Amino acid sequence: MIRVGGTAGVLTRTALADVVVLGKLVPKGTTVYMCLHGGGIMEPPFAIDDNLRSEAYRKSEGKRTGEWDPSCIRAFDPERWLVDDGSGTGRQVFDAQAGPHLTFGTGPRGCFGRRLAYLELRIALVLVVWRFGLVRVPDQYGGFEAMDQLTHSPVRCYVRLEEA
Image (cartoon, rainbow, N blue to C red; front, side):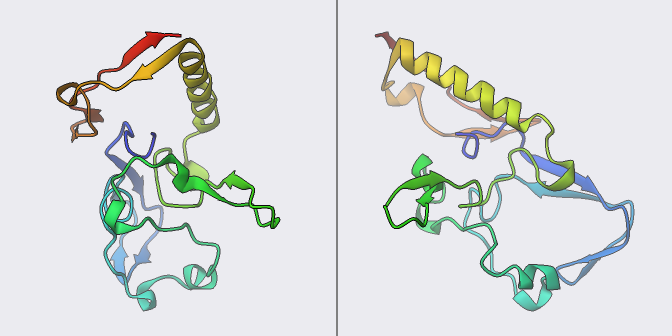
């Protein structure tokens, strides 16, 4: 849900030193904008020559974030993050690196409140599912269409509940 309905459309960082990114110089002090719904996340990724990537990236083979199937990249599919736990039992576990999303940013300057937000979301969802049944809303009141302004906001955001 967070990947499809993220609240912010962009993430910004300021270069603290001159750096080369994909063969292009980013001077110190430059504000870099990263689209949170762009290539690889909500749109098919664009090809990047591995020779332009950093040595650290090339050495991380096998430890990279997974990629979504471009034919269904916009689909709401929570099972994307379920992967085999490797025990041979067929047991599946949640893997945050199963595919790309930047909802809470990343690295040392990622969102400090990420764990609290996940906990609050779990509690809220459990309380809703425990108390109510979710009922499909008519097409004119539902959908995944959104608009990017200051935040990423749904065009139509209705929920229909039945008391359990």
